[in-house]
Figure 1 (cartoon, helix red, strand yellow):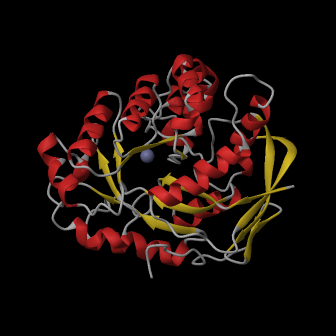
Figure 2: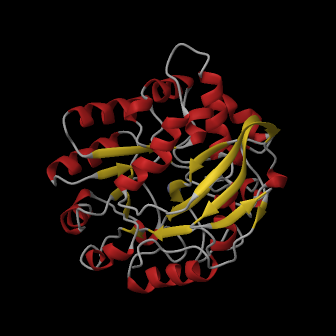
Length: 361
Ligand SMILES: [Zn+2]
């Protein structure tokens, strides 16, 4: 049995408010705890999006009643809320900006709409960018111009990891995260994930090539955090004519990483170690997002337990996983959160509302 600190997932789509048939603060935080994650940072593209006082209160009130693990809620950048967001900064996980195409109130059509956010948002709290490929280069240029830290969400491409490496070497304040699905799945896996339902492999950023995956593994030291981008949609939606992009991920994060750590131990090239997992899933996110240490919090993992990933065993409401049938090692046996046993033998033992908003004094 190994003991690790509780993991932090800086990128989770809780789906509440607005789409609680996919997930809510209760089911998302149960999935988190079952996966050994004791703190989640929730994304703002809910319905409505979280982008002002009223909507932030809406999300936080739902979380206060239902969350079982600790959390904070991001606010989203829109075309006309840059003036009010600094007031909310101390209550929010950070500012999320969708620089590539998105819809509705969080859409930022041109770079003049990025500027006031980079100017106004307090530098002590991170700006997180959804920015792919060349858009990411523009985001890094903004970090340099405004001399402030930015964190790039879910990088997946060779060109992205290489550019972030070069930017870091020049002292630009950029950090990044990678999701397990971009480390373990490529375009070649699409037929297996799909099972005749092509919607199941839809995710943004899209699954990349083997060459991209290799570049991520070869530059593991450039990756600051592991995040899941847990983005649950129910199976009927994934199999429909208009499938929404996104994978669940909270419950598969740790076993996939532990299995990789074990496999790669025997290879000569880059090695993933337990220390890497602690660094990228606890220490770095704490630093980047200015998060408090969770006292008396740890997880116990049976490193040698071998099993098959099955959606039937999961707490997420969405009812499926792209890793169905994968043989993995490493089962979370126990989670202790702030002195209380939160998970034991597959059962969630803390009540709704036990989770704490880490941005509340
Ligand atoms: Zn996301």
